[in-house]
Image (tube, rainbow, N blue to C red):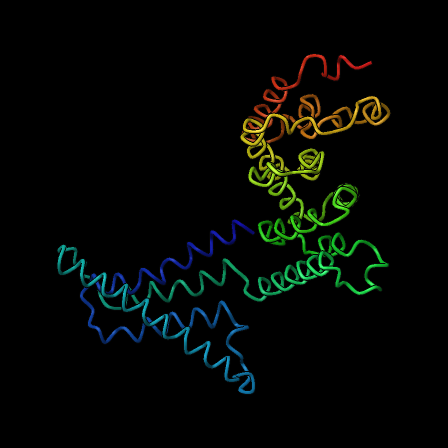
Length: 326
């Protein structure tokens, strides 16, 4: 999702370059309405929910919003066009171009933006995330209805209902709200179980969990144990998620070395450790990280995991290494 957002930004750039180049090429001010219309067309294509197809949908607020949007677009066009004219006249940076080239460049942004981003899908995802946040906030305020409260954890259910390609940044915000509410420790444990059960699903939620668990600002006040390990397990064998975890976990652990040790007395975990010998620490034990290092993984991923494994090895007190356990 983040990659699509960046692609959309790149695809939108020609829309702004068009009027700027038009000014540099010496185009007449009479060309301004053309670019203003292209800006408006971009919004019609990329934000269809704001431009009703039915006449009945054009209520007073909708008309006012559309008029304001067109006015703002016109101001942007005038500014960009004026900057181009100013650079051409004052700095002598005039670029002799046929008038159709800046217009074609601005128009090209519309199909490119549509290829990079599906506005309908994006709107649906925003609606799902808004609903998830509303449920979480309602639970925090104690306004969730009794029927919902008797069912499974509504906050966890809302997170698990998100589509696989949910925006990780927005999902991390919802996750943060869910894991600050009462019962966060149990909720985190249940989330880990759900992600472990559905290994090939919830990619957006998995990435959000990694972003949240390795957020340096949030980790300073973290009261939950084991969030980094949960995020590591959520990455599974996905190279992208593993690399994201490793490259964010290293600077976090360098800044806050105490985060690695956040589980209870190892003696209570002996049976579990026999099966999964990395569960002792909030960050995975170096031996656990080593299991993720496979020759068929990308070189960048192997390097980042080795860096994290080496750091963990240096930070682990000698008397608390797994090899020294009874």
